[in-house]
Length: 261
Image (cartoon, rainbow, N blue to C red; front, side, top):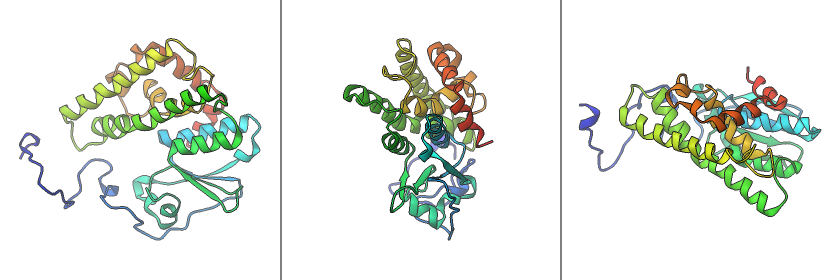
């Protein structure tokens, strides 16, 4: 039976792996699959992550805070291999019931504070250190709007375009076209916005830039999905490209990327 002949059942059941690169760790239920003891270091922040866009957000943020002299942002990085299903270990699930990276454990507070969801972590760190998040109410609202825009848009870029373009078991025209169209629309949103300002927010460099660059800036610069920059013609979004290079040239961004190499 071809995809064109597929008719969804009245009740979907999970009776086989879906195929593709992540099939072995995808499942329709939550909770741990195995016992696991997570490593814990001595630094205030314990970061459990991988060098994905969402993981990069947090190391860049922490490196930016350290560059500002915020010693409380010192961190230990513990790699969680999501390809091996380490995100379903018992200790990790206690920190994040959604079993996704990244997660931080802030040991400077008593009791220690766990924070999950990458944009929630950015917001938590920005508030704690009073940095990279505007104080003015109007400017703060703008920054948060763009921060949550990225959080809601990432599912189209990563889970949609990235999945069907790179990770699906075979090329499928309809979903690739559907998500390529939405990804290009989002790049156009950014390009039009950045035509009028240097950074995402009028107040200057912020958590919104860190969050959005980790996905869209890196994509535009040819990182992430092999061939995607050419496929999406990201070079045509010249304001995005200018902004992406400005962010990439920051020393803290280089440090935040280097820790995963």
